Amino acid sequence: GFKLKLVGHSLGGATAALLAIMLRKRSKQELGFSPDIVSSVGFGTPPCVSKELAESCTEFVSSV
Image 1 (cartoon, rainbow, N blue to C red):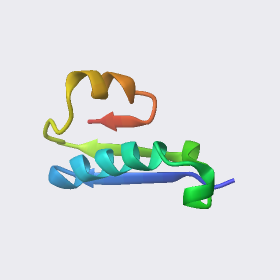
Image 2: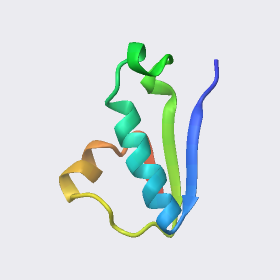
Image 3: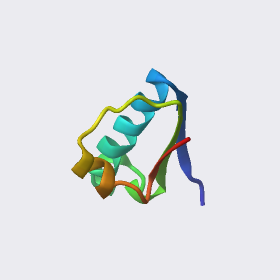
Image 4: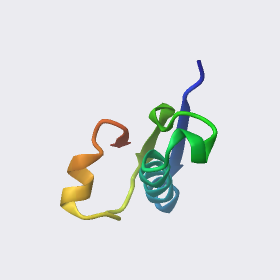
């Protein structure tokens, strides 16, 4: 019943976003838990992905 929320500021926010994207692409067998529990929030995050990738992960990656 747990959720995994990755949080960071500036470069840490970009790292959290990239890690969330990478983990969500893995299978439950590879991770040992469901990738659906992973999300991220970044504060003051610099651009780190393409527009297309950013639009495809809006349900689990947020930036403030």
